[in-house]
Image 1 (cartoon, rainbow over the protein chains, first blue to last red):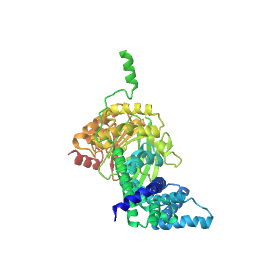
Image 2: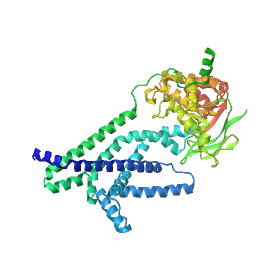
Image 3: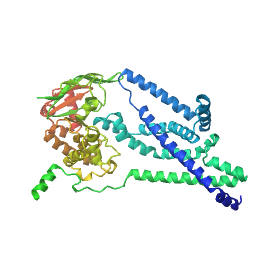
Image 4: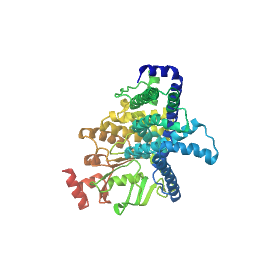
Length: 255
Length: 244
């Protein structure tokens, strides 16, 4: 490898690299966030306790069956194949000419959603039964319990796994070059196709991918630390942040 | 006397194993009732049936003149009227002490933040934990956690407080601080139903003691009667085993 070539490729093509990296980052970010939301909804639905009424129970069973079909299919087939089927399939079957970038968002999101829903379900199941019981005992329903008690803890616990998904998405968006999404791999291929310097061009792409994944893992680690809060707590001497009626009375007496 | 909760012919079975058999008893307003008995006698299950953490297999739970088990009832609304204190504390790990006491008030009772915090502070003061509002549960000792758990339950201003072996998971030196708080609550006229292994405490604070054995109420009466002149042989045996 010649270092001069690397420098030259960068100086000639840096806008294309940057644009490609930007698209990669955009797709993986949107895909991870939407996938996370899909996973969150499915995770919560799949952990609803079996209801007493028969009609509700059957309804929940049907929903659960549909959701497991979705999860199994999207976890069990490669994303590169899903991309082909969804993008070309939708054009062929329904005559929908999807925008390539929107197709990319859709594919990565539903793919990530299938993985995330299982990760989130695991996170929810890992929370101690006592937390649910305490929440129910003060009168919270399933969704209040989830929102105020269980999910905040579950999400904290699955943050490392979510970071994993994000990093995987950054790398796996490269398969979307099969539907000509102009992400980093696709751009690098075009650059290399022009200068026939495959090794040097992809070496640059390699570095860019690594910078993206490394930065993302660091940011997520920082968020984890922030969520954990400080190690110590400050003792609270009544500084009137909360005034009781008695305090107010006492104050009045003093003046 | 006015019964707050009345339990009639309550049964509970896990599969074919009958844990509770035809339980009848009531808790009156302002009364402190202690349930004692050996492990596996069904006392915790009974308490958990009262606030429906376990679904009874049969019988009635009458609250305010209505049967809670008739399927038409809003279980969540009923539960807000019962404060529950668990053996394992079960504080919400993601919230600090103050938030533990306000989250239920704000989300379930729809109180404003300010009102919820005032109420929470009032009860945190009662249990002597008002200085720790910023602490997370993992930063507290067992006794402190349990006191916060009591404040959390009190903050919902329930009609009855249920205690499920509140001192069983504590180190011996921390049992005292929790029992002291409970004693003060009992003296203040709060209606309490307590499952406990602390016989001295039961003798001292309760108005009525219920002795359970093998899923049935074997004997019921005033603490003097149960502890000094038990009528049943199995009560005598149990007391002999636990008091020595």
